[in-house]
Amino acid sequence: MWKWAALVVLAVAAAWWLRTQWAGFDWRLAAASFTGMRWGWLLGAVAAVGGTYVGRALRWAVFLKPLRPHPSLRNLLSATVIGYAALVLLGRPGEFVRPYLIAVKERVPIASQLAALVLERIFDLLLALLIFALALARVRASGVHAGARLTWVLSAGGWVVGIACLALLLLLLGLRHFSESGRRRLTAVFRFLPEAQYPKIEKALAAFLAGAESMRSDAALALVLAYSVLEWSLIAACYWCMIRAFPATGSFTFVDSLIVMGFVSFGAVFQIPGIGGGMQVVATLVLVELFHMRVEAAASFAVALWILTFVTIVPVGLFVALKEGLSWRGLRRIGPEAEG
Image 1 (cartoon, rainbow, N blue to C red):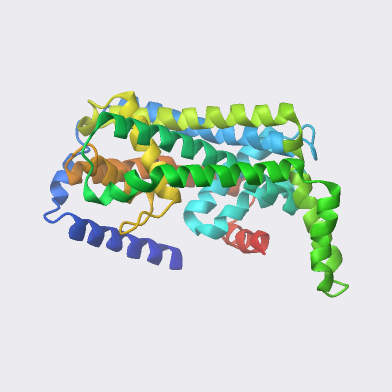
Image 2 (spheres, rainbow, N blue to C red):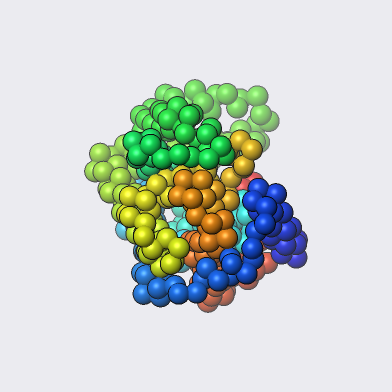
């Protein structure tokens, strides 16, 4: 119940934000922005989004190989769609549903799959930052006039990308080359714990590092990179199809769609001072400030993009969960259990 109350509060807050940032917001014009949509392109966007879940399952299979040489793609795919549905419905606790389900289905330690989740986030962030860097370079080269709300992004974005990429690469290298002696030193830090608790910490740490074991293989690293590029290529295809589907953005080029995608990916990860985060807000901001669209059309596009890329997985995930005997109450319990 609290989840739906939070969604109502969020919707009210978004409406208030639009009203304060852009006076005279015309809701009828926003609704009219959906007329004349090209449904063929919209179906293409749906297909691209569906492909991203398959790509994520294939990449996760590489993370699993040191523990399960032949993991079930069916198990990974079902856990992926259920996990993303839980993420939309539960918020942050839902993040842990997918690694928990994979650990149970493939009979591996939960800590090892939390390590796989960390690895997945590292590769996704690296690709997202690289796409944003490309978008930033194109905007600067074009000399387009950006509004005041994007001044911080244009001036500090390069530094943020560089520092974040360096930190992620160092973290990846640390996981790749973490030695047995390093593991022993790390576990020694927890010697102050009671004798009954220390073995649990040691076992969890060993399982976590086992989950990152795939990164020690050059072949596995190359395969993960390939699947990550495939994943983000499908996301780029989704953005392109959505842009072609909307009449207000029908004249955009593919490079324009990459610019939108890059800024939205950046804004969803890093809070923009004075604006905040969230893909709906950032997408609206970019379309208005960089491409000088009417705020009503920009907001309509942003909401449609959010629904397609996040919300559409919810009925699919719930259907698969019910088919596997998982209840809504069970999904709500999984998140806190795995997080703890």
